[in-house]
Amino acid sequence: MSSAAYQQLCERSREVYLLRSAAAVLSWDFETYIPSKAVPYRAEQLSYLEAKAHTLFTDPVVGDWLQAAEQLGFDPGLEEGANIREWRRSYDRATKIPVALIEEFEKTRTMAREAWARARAESNFSLFEPHVEKIVTLTRQKADLWGYRESPYDALIEDYEPGTTAEQVKPILKELRAALVDLLSEIETETKSLPENFLDGHYSIQGQQAFSREVAGAFGYDFAAGRIDTTMHPFATTLGPFDQRITTRYDLKRFEFSLYGVMHETGHALYEQGLPPDRAGLPSGEAVSLGIHESQSRLWENHVGRTPEFWHLWHPTACKYLPDLTRFSPTDLASGARRVALSFIRVEADEVTYDLHILLRFELELALVEGRLKVKDLPEAWNTRFHELFGLVVPDDARGVLQDIHWSLGSLGYFPTYTLGNLNAAQLMAAAEKQVSGLSDQLAQGNYAPLLGWLRENVHQHGRRYLPADLMRRATGESTQARYRIDYLRRKYLS
Image (cartoon, rainbow, N blue to C red):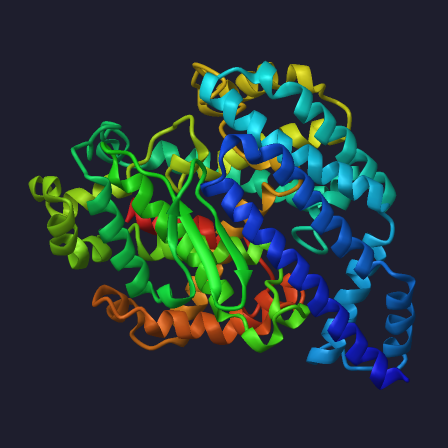
């Protein structure tokens, strides 16, 4: 009975995955090619599929199978034990949310995504406000049903970073903020004073596409199992085994927006392509957390892509696809890519100031979820806190409270994982440099396989077998620490 129960759990888990992968295809189309009149029915489709998946997984018989499988006493450090542990965690959370709430939430966020796009285009938060109000209300309901000890925010972040709480995030961001303020005051004047339009030019979309595609392929992205498309907000998504897609956006004046967007999303896709495909649909075949996921994108984007070595190697290729770059030396391009300056847009922020953007969002959504901030007051709160952190006056909603897609998707609790990803990236890179002989020289020569191989072995292949903190300890010898990121930034910008 118990052995059969484990196999039944595997079959049900794969069935749920099949439904959600079908929904992922519809979501990808929604972000890329859907005609505007199709949005309301797409909301119905996505709502139905998620409700169906939720119902299948929360069937009482799944609880019976879990109980029977748990009696086998599998080692939680082995695959079967880890799968049971993760199914139990997911089942206990899922069974607390009624299917009616799932359906309402899916419909709400699908319509909110469309409203956000329109509000951002018109730079008018009032068009988005009622949708945020409903999302926050539904999110609070979910948090109350899940339960929490100190803050409803803890119930939300658990979905993205298991075992993490708001109280654990606060001191990390406080330590980083202090370090970043000191670092910004020390960075050389010429680095900070590079004009924002330093690299501006005339860069064809076709040239940008070709260059980005070649870089992604060199990093290891398998185009036979993925593709690059265009969207308003870059993202990576997995539609099933051997189907990991990425998107980017293009600016005819600024090639770096698309290039570094592709590097970032390639890091996400490499993680997904490194998961064991024969485990698709099982916890052991899924990424462990967003903080680990983000570490992969940040590692390739910043630790590999924003370096003088990268631009000395790729300068001829860049000039071939984007002839306007011939007026810049490799050193010029590296300086432009590492330009440090306080700015409005998170996805365009340099790696030194980036975590300040996350601090802002974490504080605001924490206040929203805890009821200390009303949705109607969000733009004013954003602008006030942004000025305190950055010393800049937000010019409009599009460059302020409306710039991110996350709240329209109902993803409250997501933002802290970006900073955790930055910390993990620096720590993983430091470990790789110690463990892979001559890694820096190999990267400078464009041999990215050793780094990808190390990540495959120490991160990707494990899926959710280990919790995030345990995975970091296995790969680096200790749980996530802030000092690696601080040391990395100081070496990179002050040496």
